[in-house]
Image 1 (spheres, each protein chain N blue to C red):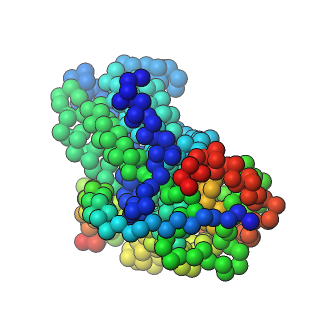
Image 2 (cartoon, one colour):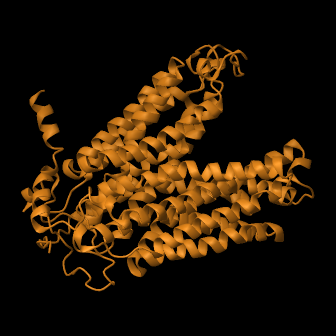
Image 3 (tube, each protein chain N blue to C red):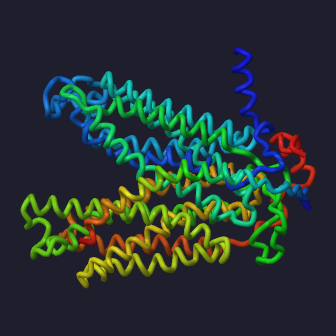
Length: 507
Length: 46
């Protein structure tokens, strides 16, 4: 390695990221946001599916997709390079994203606590940006396995590392506003697709030609942009010196023991009931949220049908032109929900600093149950405004659930391992990613195909089942109590751990 | 009990310029994304 290379590598070390005396802590949230806004594009990948579904046909000089031979099985279709990819095949990318996000956050969380946020941020930038470049090559040579490996697996690991990289650092910088600090970063993950999707759309239009849909060029451009932005974020990270606290701030002594000043080791956290109760809280909140996100747009279209454009009749009875108008309204509704999702992240997480985490989740679950159960009623009333309002409020609480959980973990388990414990807890997200859509799809299918219920009414039972998930989450949250004394680290253990984590070098 | 040491840094006023620049750099793309979403959602209220 060259002298310059050695210097750059050394600058990633955790002890080199300790802030000096005059450092302004408000510089850390934008660094975290820079990383989260980039990796948040994972949510917006569906913008590529349609152009990719006929990329091969266009490359051959046509305008339509080239279908695979009908006798090819699923595996053969994946290997085949002479026909176009189906959208359902491309959709596996989402599964890979969220499986690898949860797994890498769980596996590498402990390493992150020792290596520091900057090193984790740089690795995340290499994985996410590099993954997009590998995907670009996959699109260029029309090889879907390279897309899955590049963006799905390598990029997915970047998502996990990037997601948890600022959590511990932000909580240590903002002991007085833990919720707000992590809410600001996690808001970025929700907002990434809001920037990335329209940007990808602009780039694809710019790069498209008679023989290219413009996707591989867009992947290269976005991969480089994201790499640069994430590296800026990673090099913007600073960790506070051990024991740092804001001037004039004292750790609260009250709170019924729900905010600890001590620390639980990562390896002991899963042995506590609190860890699994909070796992249940996150899993239920996210499962219900994912379920409702998948349903919101088709539900609006099927429940209200022609009334959305002041015409009588159900959706199926409308002309193609009217259906297109309704699809545009539904797309607007989805955009509004994304916006409320990110606003909810900062709003609820900040509010939790004042009313407490447990109370915040009590609101999510109680208010959520009422709203989920009321949505069919609003549909029955024919009130679009009420229906949209209900879903908007639900989405704020879905986002709020993600953003408030790191602060809840810090309150319960202390700050020493909060990033790594949060990483382990994100497996609840992976589980919810399977549970939510499965519940929604199977209940709907059963009602329509077996029970013969009309499509517009088939959502009602699903909403009640999702409200039931929130009830489970409510009981998990109610059962959360302070962690028992035996799980906390002793002073000697903490000292040893901090030495390992290079924290003591900062004294 | 795990005792924390307390190190309170001196306030650095010049750091606020860097804060403003950093927030602007992340705020501009975020504001653009929010604007695009609002434009898309506006059709719902017509």
